[in-house]
Image (tube, rainbow, N blue to C red; front, side, top):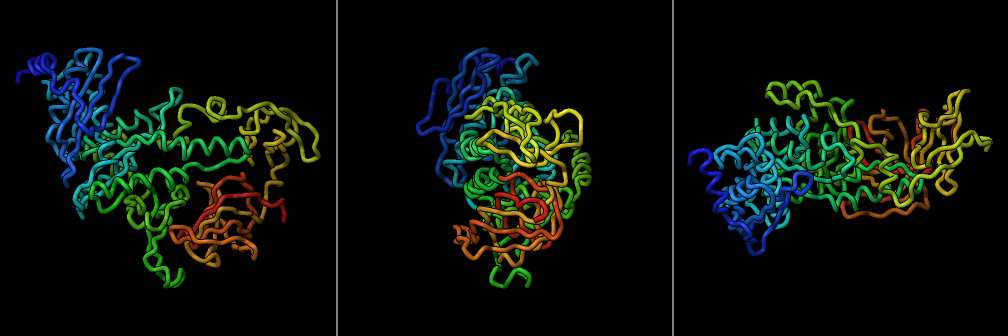
Length: 508
């Protein structure tokens, strides 16, 4: 059909407008600021191909939104789920014979709505036949996950890309966040550019409940948690592995810098055969086992990390050779829900207890100044104290009850002991020989001691759950904040993790 004629045809006789199939999954996109809104509904057959048996749409706003909704419905009716997942804005526009630049927002909205419907159907209803060559790849729109997908495709793996939408906030910078609606759209375009079907899954409610709310509560209590481990352990990887099974994929792959080891050697005991462990990446400067520490062995066994043996420079080379613009994209430095804003502003808008002014005191208890809220400070921090001249002062403690920040000289941060709580160990504590208390910090030689009266149980993954563990460090380190994650290693193997409870006083 000639260009322009297809557009007029879909506008005059839209396919499936105002039709919602029985037992449908619906996705919507648009509204403000343009005013156009597209809503697409699909019904999925229960067969092993996941064929889209029926589809319908509704749209308000300009004629282009109506035509694009109609084109999307016509494209997906009767298509298998993974074939429909290859349809994006470009395919919708092409089906209409091409669109002028002024109308390009419309196929983007229709594609967003379609993929939200596809994601909901895949997450809830899909049950595709198992395929030993299919692998699900988590894509964020960045260089690491793109290269992970490229490497797997080179192995003749049938790559299916997926992006999780975890957070949306008007004050965030969507281009800097790895899980925003903007990131989903960018990842979808990248996946389609590489020839992969792409699904997006909306987990904003689950992410807020399981990650952001505990983070806010912890700050109100004077703790400084590490939300990435909670996200990977309780939300992200859990949902992706469930989707992997529904799509019949044999493995889940991510762009993390880590490796998987069965750890069935003499150091870890013959009885542990088959219980997979994380191992450090070959380039320890980029290692991300710290962020993945909460993963259970049964989850690790179903995962692949194609970048585990590579350097970041090599990853960028591969992306550049594939002519991907993300080859030069900077690494994300922020927590995804803080991208484009800062902790103070975020706490002010979202926390149940907003930061309030309080005293800054020295070791003697003398008042030295005033802070804007204890939640804005963490142990070891120097900037933001505004104490004027004199020797440098560092945060030694924060007291949520009195809203007090205690400061002192840097040497008072040093300690040789840590107390951990809520510890999970996948191997006996006597095997631990190093601890890491910062995501980019070094592993420090140590020994573990479980108190005789400590409560020990076994969780559902087979890990030993211990309420209290002492860590004796073989060299002094600067203390980190209560609530922060501590990862426990033997050599390159991650054996467990815990939460820093109350570091002992310096020199003890």
